[in-house]
Length: 161
Image (cartoon, rainbow, N blue to C red):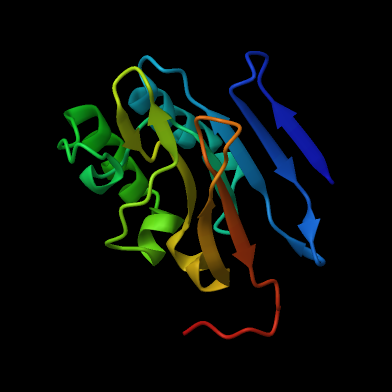
Protein backbone atom coordinates (compact mmCIF):
# COMPACT_ATOMS: atom_id res chain seq x y z
CA UNK A 1 0.00 0.00 0.00
CA UNK A 2 1.49 3.32 -1.07
CA UNK A 3 -1.15 5.77 0.18
CA UNK A 4 -4.53 5.90 1.89
CA UNK A 5 -6.86 8.90 1.76
CA UNK A 6 -10.19 9.05 3.58
CA UNK A 7 -12.74 11.60 4.66
CA UNK A 8 -13.73 12.32 8.26
CA UNK A 9 -17.35 11.25 7.72
CA UNK A 10 -16.42 7.79 6.45
CA UNK A 11 -18.00 8.26 3.03
CA UNK A 12 -14.92 7.30 1.00
CA UNK A 13 -11.47 5.79 1.11
CA UNK A 14 -8.87 5.86 -1.66
CA UNK A 15 -6.22 3.13 -1.64
CA UNK A 16 -3.20 3.50 -3.87
CA UNK A 17 -1.24 0.30 -4.16
CA UNK A 18 -0.23 -2.55 -6.41
CA UNK A 19 -1.70 -5.90 -7.32
CA UNK A 20 0.85 -8.27 -8.85
CA UNK A 21 3.26 -5.33 -9.35
CA UNK A 22 0.71 -3.28 -11.29
CA UNK A 23 -0.61 -0.03 -9.82
CA UNK A 24 -4.38 -0.25 -9.41
CA UNK A 25 -5.89 2.52 -7.30
CA UNK A 26 -9.14 1.59 -5.54
CA UNK A 27 -11.84 3.99 -4.38
CA UNK A 28 -14.67 2.85 -2.11
CA UNK A 29 -17.62 5.21 -1.74
CA UNK A 30 -20.64 5.23 0.54
CA UNK A 31 -23.22 7.79 -0.57
CA UNK A 32 -25.76 9.12 1.93
CA UNK A 33 -29.33 7.90 1.37
CA UNK A 34 -30.60 11.42 0.77
CA UNK A 35 -29.14 13.27 -2.21
CA UNK A 36 -27.07 10.27 -3.33
CA UNK A 37 -27.02 11.09 -7.08
CA UNK A 38 -25.75 14.64 -6.48
CA UNK A 39 -23.21 13.40 -3.93
CA UNK A 40 -21.87 10.75 -6.34
CA UNK A 41 -21.58 13.19 -9.24
CA UNK A 42 -19.71 15.72 -7.08
CA UNK A 43 -17.39 13.21 -5.39
CA UNK A 44 -16.36 11.60 -8.68
CA UNK A 45 -15.55 15.03 -10.08
CA UNK A 46 -13.56 15.86 -6.91
CA UNK A 47 -11.52 12.65 -7.33
CA UNK A 48 -10.39 13.46 -10.88
CA UNK A 49 -6.95 14.60 -9.69
CA UNK A 50 -6.39 11.53 -7.52
CA UNK A 51 -7.57 8.87 -9.97
CA UNK A 52 -6.59 7.63 -13.41
CA UNK A 53 -7.89 5.24 -16.06
CA UNK A 54 -6.79 2.22 -13.97
CA UNK A 55 -8.77 3.29 -10.88
CA UNK A 56 -11.63 1.03 -9.84
CA UNK A 57 -14.40 2.91 -8.06
CA UNK A 58 -16.76 0.77 -6.00
CA UNK A 59 -19.31 1.21 -3.32
CA UNK A 60 -22.83 1.71 -2.09
CA UNK A 61 -24.04 4.70 -4.05
CA UNK A 62 -27.70 4.20 -3.07
CA UNK A 63 -28.76 4.78 -6.68
CA UNK A 64 -29.75 2.36 -9.44
CA UNK A 65 -28.16 3.70 -12.65
CA UNK A 66 -30.64 2.07 -15.06
CA UNK A 67 -34.23 0.83 -14.90
CA UNK A 68 -32.84 -2.73 -15.25
CA UNK A 69 -31.44 -2.29 -11.74
CA UNK A 70 -34.87 -2.02 -10.10
CA UNK A 71 -37.30 -4.91 -9.71
CA UNK A 72 -40.12 -2.42 -10.30
CA UNK A 73 -38.52 -1.34 -13.63
CA UNK A 74 -39.27 2.24 -12.56
CA UNK A 75 -37.65 4.77 -14.88
CA UNK A 76 -34.58 6.60 -13.62
CA UNK A 77 -35.13 10.13 -12.40
CA UNK A 78 -33.52 13.37 -13.57
CA UNK A 79 -30.87 13.31 -10.81
CA UNK A 80 -29.74 9.84 -11.88
CA UNK A 81 -29.68 10.93 -15.53
CA UNK A 82 -27.30 13.71 -14.44
CA UNK A 83 -25.04 11.13 -12.76
CA UNK A 84 -25.05 8.99 -15.92
CA UNK A 85 -24.17 12.05 -18.02
CA UNK A 86 -21.28 12.85 -15.65
CA UNK A 87 -20.06 9.24 -15.88
CA UNK A 88 -20.19 9.52 -19.68
CA UNK A 89 -18.21 12.77 -19.64
CA UNK A 90 -15.54 11.12 -17.44
CA UNK A 91 -15.52 8.01 -19.68
CA UNK A 92 -16.57 5.86 -16.69
CA UNK A 93 -18.71 2.75 -17.06
CA UNK A 94 -20.57 0.46 -14.70
CA UNK A 95 -18.38 -2.63 -15.14
CA UNK A 96 -21.15 -5.09 -14.21
CA UNK A 97 -23.66 -3.50 -16.59
CA UNK A 98 -21.10 -3.37 -19.41
CA UNK A 99 -20.39 -7.12 -19.09
CA UNK A 100 -24.02 -8.11 -18.37
CA UNK A 101 -26.02 -5.82 -20.64
CA UNK A 102 -29.43 -7.42 -20.19
CA UNK A 103 -29.09 -9.24 -16.87
CA UNK A 104 -31.41 -8.10 -14.10
CA UNK A 105 -29.53 -9.27 -11.03
CA UNK A 106 -29.92 -7.37 -7.77
CA UNK A 107 -27.69 -6.61 -4.80
CA UNK A 108 -30.07 -4.98 -2.30
CA UNK A 109 -33.47 -5.98 -0.92
CA UNK A 110 -35.65 -3.37 0.77
CA UNK A 111 -37.97 -5.14 3.19
CA UNK A 112 -39.81 -1.88 3.77
CA UNK A 113 -40.70 -1.46 0.10
CA UNK A 114 -40.58 -5.14 -0.92
CA UNK A 115 -38.29 -4.31 -3.85
CA UNK A 116 -34.91 -5.41 -5.14
CA UNK A 117 -32.33 -3.11 -6.70
CA UNK A 118 -28.68 -2.77 -7.65
CA UNK A 119 -27.45 0.27 -5.75
CA UNK A 120 -23.84 -0.85 -5.37
CA UNK A 121 -21.65 -0.36 -8.39
CA UNK A 122 -18.12 -0.91 -9.63
CA UNK A 123 -17.08 1.79 -12.03
CA UNK A 124 -14.05 1.78 -14.26
CA UNK A 125 -12.64 3.75 -17.16
CA UNK A 126 -13.69 2.64 -20.65
CA UNK A 127 -10.04 2.22 -21.65
CA UNK A 128 -9.41 -0.29 -18.84
CA UNK A 129 -12.34 -2.61 -19.54
CA UNK A 130 -10.00 -5.03 -21.33
CA UNK A 131 -8.31 -5.72 -17.96
CA UNK A 132 -11.50 -7.11 -16.43
CA UNK A 133 -11.76 -10.90 -16.55
CA UNK A 134 -15.09 -11.26 -14.81
CA UNK A 135 -17.51 -9.61 -12.40
CA UNK A 136 -20.29 -11.36 -10.53
CA UNK A 137 -22.75 -10.84 -7.71
CA UNK A 138 -22.20 -13.08 -4.69
CA UNK A 139 -25.26 -14.04 -2.60
CA UNK A 140 -25.28 -13.28 1.11
CA UNK A 141 -27.66 -14.70 3.70
CA UNK A 142 -26.30 -12.48 6.49
CA UNK A 143 -27.07 -9.07 5.01
CA UNK A 144 -29.69 -7.21 3.00
CA UNK A 145 -26.95 -6.60 0.42
CA UNK A 146 -25.13 -9.11 -1.75
CA UNK A 147 -21.44 -8.79 -2.49
CA UNK A 148 -19.57 -8.47 -5.75
CA UNK A 149 -16.49 -10.24 -7.01
CA UNK A 150 -14.25 -8.62 -9.60
CA UNK A 151 -11.45 -10.55 -11.29
CA UNK A 152 -8.73 -8.47 -12.90
CA UNK A 153 -6.17 -9.66 -15.43
CA UNK A 154 -2.93 -8.01 -14.31
CA UNK A 155 -0.83 -9.46 -17.13
CA UNK A 156 1.24 -6.51 -18.38
CA UNK A 157 1.78 -8.22 -21.74
CA UNK A 158 -1.94 -8.55 -22.44
CA UNK A 159 -3.12 -6.90 -25.65
CA UNK A 160 -6.22 -4.73 -25.99
CA UNK A 161 -8.88 -6.27 -28.22
